Length: 385
Image 1: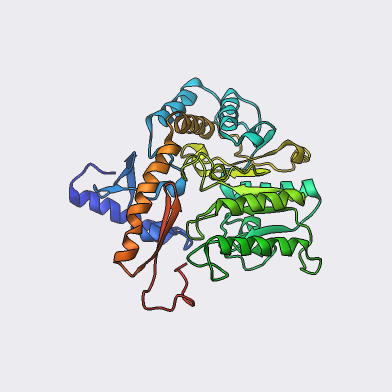
Image 2: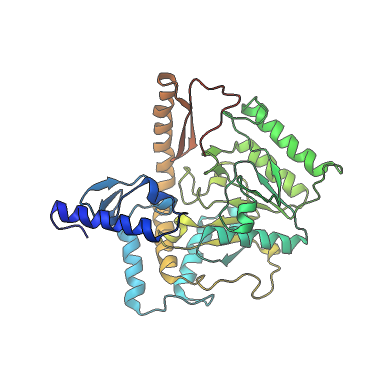
């Protein structure tokens, strides 16, 4: 760890990285681009084993709504540890879980909070996506799923099949509206309208080859797809067309939730109430936690229909309760909206100064800058994977 001479710290740092390269899977990602060895962290900064301090712009891939080791999160964890409470309880009821559910329901869209059920899943968001897909299939007795180009829902089989990089296609893929790379080449309201009409045609045309599906899953702001906010009118259109056809609408808020987009949940911008919400990342206050929240009439599961050994993580629930309450009580979603508007305005200026900045987009503090080859044909070029 840090604290020795610069030479000793550098040797420790390089040794750990060398052993990681030799022993860990080739599937590792962040470690390839960020050759640091974190040993301490606070707020926005990380201290590495090499003695250097870094600004953390990754935030645990969106898990750190309050930054590293926020005092309210640490205090919540300490209270559980000092109480002697069990740390893992499967799906048994505990005071810690009860407090988490109460706080979570306090933040939900009103139309869902009044009649919600919650299912605790395995600790990763991808398992919550799997649970959501299983739930709507059981509730509707249908199998098909509607998903969108550019989507990312996780790395397990079902979640990956509904994502943009799927190789074994098991879902009907729909166009996701956007301006810069509009699939219809028009962008704006016209592009969103065409995307909505395509979806309606696919559902209503008996010759489309797409039978009535079990559900539609979407991200209110696509993350891995390029930080693409869905137009509010289009989201409301998707809500209407799914409701009219009794198709459960699943909102994947794993990346967008807990204030990141300038509202507590990204669906709040459009005012829609999804039938199912998939939640993970920031809801655990930096610790592994994943849940689905859904309308009570969809709760047709038999006991054990979806389970997981680590769905009773008490430390994550305590940290999550503290995080949700702090974000709500201190208006951090509103702060993200204000700061995000300033950042988007300033970053947008770069598009006029630098030809390599193709587009700036986002919502709240979920912001993306697309860098392009200014000499390439925009009709044929694509962003880097």
